[in-house]
Amino acid sequence: MCIDYRALNKITIKNRYPIPLIADLFDQLGNARWFTKLDLRSGYHQVRVAEGDEPKTACVTRYGSFEFLVMPFRLTNAPATFYTLMNKVLQPFLDHFVVVYPDDIVVYSKTLEEHVGHLGEVFQTLRENKLYVKREKCSFAKREVPFLGHIVGGGTIRIDESKVRAIAD
Image (cartoon, rainbow, N blue to C red; front, side, top):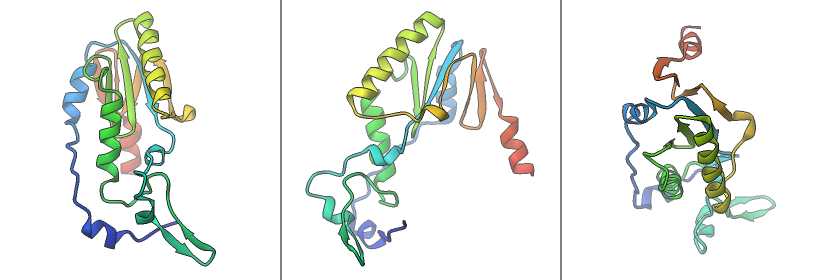
């Protein structure tokens, strides 16, 4: 389903949120040896529309008018709102053992024991905030993981060759 929100987006006050520099995220992963990559299930659709604003998201069909209770795609502030939420929820862990890039979360640690503890904290925080991961798209306790078109692990960062092949093909 595609809803035309151009009129609403035109009158919306833009909420811009700076996306972190990828190099800064990679720098944080430098000395880690264990990684877990988490991908959130239905990203934006886990964010509740502010109560009272549901009519702004309405779409009319021949079966009636429907209003979103969760953030739909194509709203101008959806990316900034989602990224603000991710940073707010995971704030205690950022720059310590978590990096976030919109809906990809990487938990990194120096030892496996430390990693298990970090994962417990992250999962508890996600659960408390009703944010859920898509298990099939996650990688747990690996020595290296794909992240932002690269493979990180073992103190190195290299380009993901599968991405290069996809572009070449």
